[in-house]
Image 1 (cartoon, chains in turn purple, brown):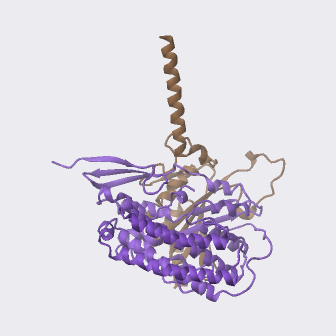
Image 2 (image 1 turned 180 degrees about the horizontal axis):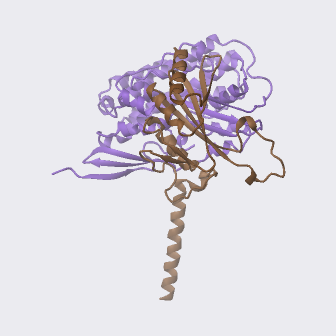
Image 3 (image 1 turned 180 degrees about the vertical axis):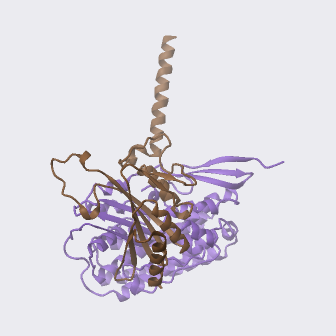
Length: 362
Length: 196
């Protein structure tokens, strides 16, 4: 007798995180055979709002698109406008932007590194990862005055500076992070219960990764060495050595490993920055006018490539600001990652792309 | 390497489109190349997509915009002008990526047409971007394999030249509507009881 196929709804509330997205899954027995994704539950129309506000008001607005990669939005937005206006920012500001971004990346990756064990029921590791992450939250609070929205970027530079004392504090905090991060990495690599639930699950082969245009750790876990920091450098990344973490298997386990390696790599990048950063101004000292024109800018957010397109007409209000968040192309790739796996694997597969619904619903 | 890829793209496109397109490249001081290509006819975007697919590229994103007039000929808006005299054009920017190069190809839709050929059959990575454009700018797609709504409820009626404030139209708002409908039917039910 042929196995009957039926549909099950997953979501829209609490699929993996407390953010709404709705999946209609077709299953045969307990095996997924197809899915349909339905978004738009908390769409805020922020793109429309950016066209009602001036360039400087938009700094605050774009920072609120997402929480975990909040820094990347104003960062990339500023870079697009600077490119458009031909503004060259001070070298120290480039380094300071890089430092802020890498601190956010560590905090974001540690969050997902904690979430994966949480989904598969390994809650003690989840709590350990979150406790380790807390040191990065403290770091952000001490240096930037805020635990999530750093508010460091402005058009033409940054709005913060690092004193020698702060620099020492950052180095010390990062030094203290290395050991627990290595421990978590070892547990993730060797623990049988983690490997059983993540290895060979949610596989995205390299050819499909190319076809779907996936970005970030999802792409790098499928063997694509694409990292905006290396391929299309910006800020201080052209002066730094960045080694993108690449894995070949394209499963949930590989994505976890990529994030673990990237968190360690971010520590090295910040150390390089603090060592190499020259003295000098951190912004232009004035608020530049933005002429008419159009430009695009990209950055590597924790979840992957973020792109901003800006078009202006000489007024203080942009004619069009459009951005594409890294999670956006990664959603569609779930059509490849899910079929063939069990219902019980769904949440860990969704969690492994580190989805940001807040970003998707911009 | 980058120069070769740029030349290759340009010659492949010229072979298919002749001299009908304008293309310029800019390179920033970090060596990041952005190409800006303006196409003569909206359907030419399919040719660009084929060339990009041949170069194993992908779609970064698609940015449609309603614009009062072309960028270079920005007219000063006179107080006496009415909106009707100011025709809105729809410009669609397709952002592609191949060989470390970012390329933006722009098409302008004629005033009487709000339909474009879908490039999703050629480049899979265009899927969600095209569906989003369909919903947020009411641009109809021809030949899209799965043109279902992505964000908006299928009952929402779309209008031309309107940016729909999604706070009014988002899926989450349906909860409220649903509740109002229930309350309404309850009230009707209550009155029906009284009449009995």
